[in-house]
Amino acid sequence: METLSFTWLGHGTFLFGSPGGKRLLVDPWVATNPVCPEASKKIRELDLILLTHGHDDHTADAVSIGRATLARVIAPYELALWLQQKGLQSVTGMNRGGTIEAAGLSITMVPACHSSSIVEDGRIVYLGEPCGYVIRFEDGLTIYFAGDTSIFGDMRLIAELYHPRIAFLPIGDTYTMGPQQAAKACELLGVTQVVPMHYGTFPSLTGTPGRLRELVEPRGVQVIELKPGETAS
Image (cartoon, helix red, strand yellow):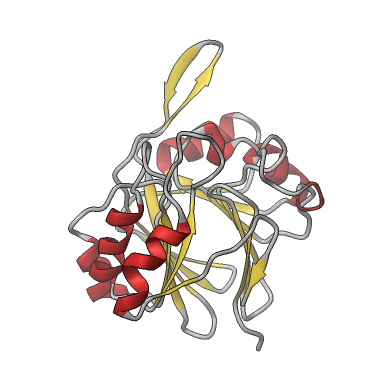
């Protein structure tokens, strides 16, 4: 069995390679993502797609990649219905608190504090509540993928129930947590490693990994900072 690998494709988009050889894409936005490397925009041989909410900087390529790869898509219930209306066949709707087994992984949907919608024909379409995910891989390693969120006190419960080792947290500020909130989230979650995301894409996203590092590394939390297209394992 291999070790977990993950590649940051920019913004909130990650491609995971599981220890058992499964490929999992979270919040696919690559084609028009200004920081996604050109070489990373073609995604093939995918097993699962996870979506945290409906905003197009997290879902823009869900339909096209879902069709091209025939990957199973997991999303909050209302977003799942919308994807089915767009023609995707292999879609599983969930809600927060639920756990399913998919491609040999345990996937739990957990809360996020954000919003979820998309604009179609000039109208805002509501796409349910946002979420994060706790993912337990084949070797037992557990991660927490926050999606877009502020800090919230029930991150303590995520720590108590699931014991994640790595947290993937937004740090950009303005629309999500900034570094100060993310540092507190690391404390609530009890993680030993944090991967910052959702920063640097636009000028309004001002939080930086350097600031997060200043806050958490003295407490023994390692910041895994990636450049778009870079892989860690």
